[in-house]
Amino acid sequence: MLVVDDIDSLNPDEQKQVLELGGLVGGTDSRLIFTTRFNQSASNDNVIKLDGFNLSDEFPQYIASLRERIDFPDLSPASIGKIHEVSGGSPLFSESVVRLLRWYPINEAITEWKGARGASVRDAALRREIAQLSLEAKRILLAVALLGEGSQVELSELLGYHKELVERCLGELEALFLIATPALASQRRFRVPENTRRLVIDRGADLITDRPRLEREIIAFRKQSGRSLTKDKRVALAISQAAALVRIGDIKNALSTIRDARRRTQNHFDLLSYQATLHLKEYPRQPENARKLAREAYMAGCRKDEVFACWFEAEWDVKHFVGALEAAEAALHCKAAGTVDWMVRKSAALASKAGDFAKSHAFDTAIKTMFEASGILHDIIKRTKTDGAADWQEEQSKQHDQIWIWASLDATGLVKARAQLDTLEKFWALQDFRINNLRRLLSVMDGVASSVTRSGNRIRSNQRDLVALIIRKVESLYERRCRLFPADSRHQGVRTKLDQITTKIDSALDSLSEQNRKHITSIL
Image 1: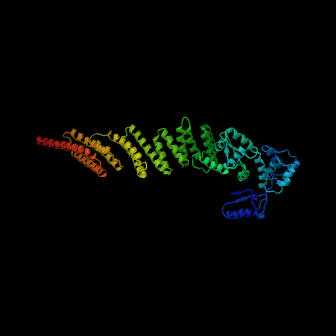
Image 2: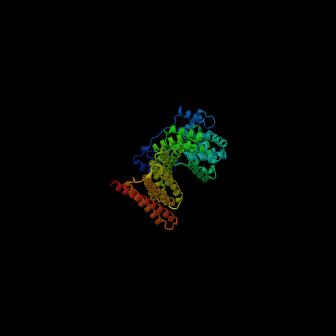
Image 3: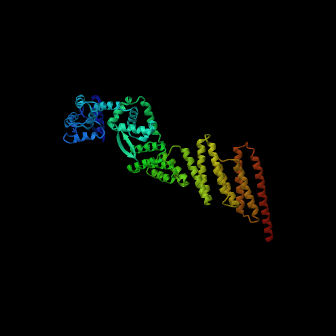
């Protein structure tokens, strides 16, 4: 349903164009209603005539109600009858005539405006009323008309007027132009009636001389909440008011504003998300409330970047790294802005989760989880290439150093050496070719040598095979690094020590073989 109000405010050619548009739209499932005081274009067959208020009781009651917000002379029943005659009982037209009575005698007002269009009468009243306003009130009037709706705290921030000045001007305007809208958390809100709003905006140049600047300031003000736009006007207005309160440090009333709006919108997910962020601005912070609401907002359908950031931060605050990981993965799945940043957060959450596993002595799981974190950093390094890659390589190195410690804790003997070697192979696969990792091959070989030496004559053939496999893999990793960094002079020192340890292992194995032969001979 599309309603086009007051088409008599247009000239005849424009009215015909509106009706032609109506004919096009009317061919669809949509329906249109046009309202006018003077039918100059449409066929009478398509017109439904609506009478105004009747003179017997409705119209006098309406005139009396106007006195609650408009100051005008007392009217006799005869004068009320004259206004009814010229207006046809139309509320808007009658209000405009009544407004003019503050400057015109009733007979003069009726004579001058009889038969005029409603917009013309309203415009005449508006011109007179604007002339009575202070300069500050004029700017506030246009600001409210352009905003659509606003509260004292928003107008104060937007215009740079102190609270007392804004309140005084609102009192000045309230009797003429503004209508109070439902308050949010005791914060009074105002708007300009739609018919008057159009006239105010059209007369913007009569109100202030720098309208373009005010319009730019309003655009910037609307962006100040730092949040994505929402389609629900009620939600947008509540967030705008709350954001203005936040900027003056009034978190308590900002929270009250959002809670009030939630009750009116059945917990709209954008309000859940915004309230979650407010809990992180409280002192002290309330991350438990924030993570609960952020998760609820996501589950309700919120996919805006802010909800993921708040969710992750709140989970991180309470050291619930599983929840932080959940938030990061949700952000990546929903393609939230800043993919690399979310990959970093996911890696950090995994690394912290790995630390929790290690505290429980679940070292295998800790290593697996930390490798997942390292794999994400590896992907980031490939994405960023030279731009910031060094920072992520350093972070990956720290993760690998921790993995190396864990890999050295949960096993002994040849099993430990094999686990360490597997770990180093994964480091190589993740492009971690640091010289420290090459030197760690010496630690692996030292472990093999110690294990063989302690075995006495009890080493089995499968253990010999494992020793041989480890030596081959160590040589393979060493040769690979030499090919990648042929000019690195440190290789020679590692090579010398490797040869020494390998010789020691070979001697121990030969000695064991000789002992075994002697043992067999003695038995025979």
